[in-house]
Image 1 (tube, each protein chain N blue to C red):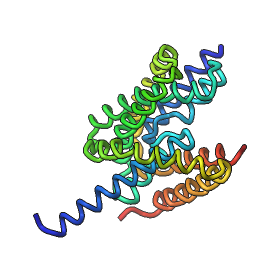
Image 2: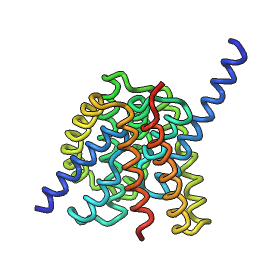
Image 3: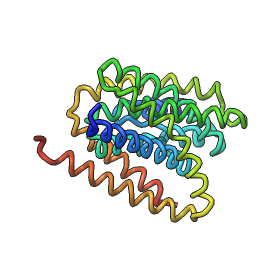
Image 4: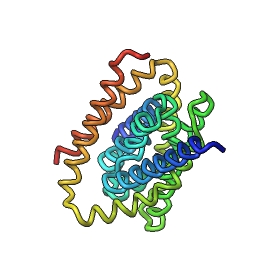
Length: 127
Length: 123
């Protein structure tokens, strides 16, 4: 409708495209989940709150991970039985994690994420 | 005993996923190599399957809590394959060690930004 709004929407799409591309690139390059990239970029570029950023990141990861899992599945690298079996405790973990997250301050989520990033950095630096 | 450790680490990966919105692969991959005995490629591939399951359940829960922008999430997910291609090209041109160190520097910079944000009084 008005020109300002249209420009804003176009900028937003480019930012989302950049976040998706970066997440895809980093997950391909380092085997880290796209979430490491998606959550901070949603917070800093699109002014998301912490909780909204983490929820939206999880939904995006479903799509990114699905593509990767299908591609690796074709090569026969996915142990489906083991993966599904270990998914049971992982599901219990994520249900607990999201429930806990609703009860702590949003800024605490930022601090937890910063701690995770430091751990990722150490993993990358130590050969 | 090894299986028990794998189960505990899988639960911890899910917990981390729910708390900070990542898939949990950082923990799933070592659990699958060390305690289940998969090769690195098999572990990373199987971890992807677990990430999909965890992210699906996590996203559904967050949607229930009102913390999901589905339109943006789909845009990010659909546009990510562009980056995968770019990543493969870069990986073949730049030494792995240089990539690791530059990414480490980047995530430390982001960690600093998030910490500063967390410690700044909210308006």
